[in-house]
Length: 109
Length: 489
Image (tube, rainbow over all chains, first blue to last red; front, side):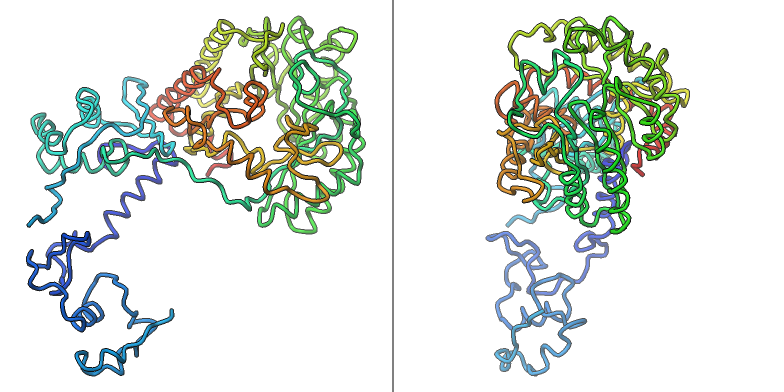
């Protein structure tokens, strides 16, 4: 904080909360811009969905792209199985998503 | 198509919920939604002035005005962002005042006030337990607590404290020392019981000091029992209302005993608690007598509680104004001491500063019904000692435990968010509506804000904030040491 100087314990707490916002949330604050998978929306309010190019052509239409781009490359914590820690085999029965997507099962954490 | 970017915000701002104050020529803000205190720089001052002048401003207009004042566009954006995130300014979209959350329903008990007797050898005319505005209904109930009830209370406290490492018992009355034998047995029992479950037990008592003996003083010192003495000042003030049943004053009886207590009690501070009432309002003189002539470590003051009916002991508005200016004079002295690194004995400032250091933001005015409960001689539980033996406020019994429904009702009423008048008051983090008991006596509802002293509280809190501001600039080390001594760090 540059303009407000904390002088009691609660104010120091607010300062550290604000600092953690600056430091921890990397998402779209980084430069160069992080990889945004084509098909992902940058804004999540209904009616405002745009893709990484600012258009709508690349939005998630095919379900398999939605699943795989979020699952493999996306930095964003969408509701996908955690293939790094808990469900490494989640997609092992799904060799070709367009054909095998029905084999993807629900994960119970 | 619109893409939202950081520079295209459509926010409109107004001042956040803050109380501004100046100390030592510098600007400070007290953040009401949190209890936080910040020193503010010149540019913050500029933003707050602009918003005060215009009421509300669009983001772009605010930034433009700051750029016109010499800031770069980036610095201006950064300034606005910082003030918005700290809630010093807020979007006009924000409609709800942030209130502290209610503590969990299973809040662990920290302290019990054992009303070891409801009998008293004095008959102070303003007494909330026996005076004209009493709410206690002791008729037909035990006058003295039995050892069995006291032991059950200790067990109840240790069990209800759960994971807490330290718990506290306050002995109270009536006149506590009329049942000293019980007090002694309880301390011995509780020390053992606490050791068994690996907890630390501390003690305190409140007394009128008229029944102190050498034996009692030695016991209190040996067992580190903190002592608060109810006392109103030099002889003519003490004897105005702190009298025996025959009307005789109590000063002459208590004074020699009190001196022995202060000389003989080596392990805990001995403090005085003064009740200010009509004609007994010379705070400075009372303080000097109790602190310097008698030798108390600390002296705290509170105005007498009345129902609003005209009583001969009631304080009127003029008297309260006089008390405030006396408080302020003593507070200045407190500050002078603090600037020299010395501790002053005026408890009212010390307590407030302690809360300001932590940034207290109260959901309830005090711990009554939450971390603290009162136990009457019969074993009835109440929110605190002031509700002892009041049938209207029984929260259960020591044998059957807390009545959670009643307790919840008490706490829901007492929560600051349910006191409408408090929602617009900047002093609510510290006050939260004021004493539950006083509210009941005055308005018939423990959940009523104590509206008769709002202005008083705001003025007093403002003065303590100024003291805090001066110390933060000129002797921050004192605040650190003060916090350490109060166990805040």
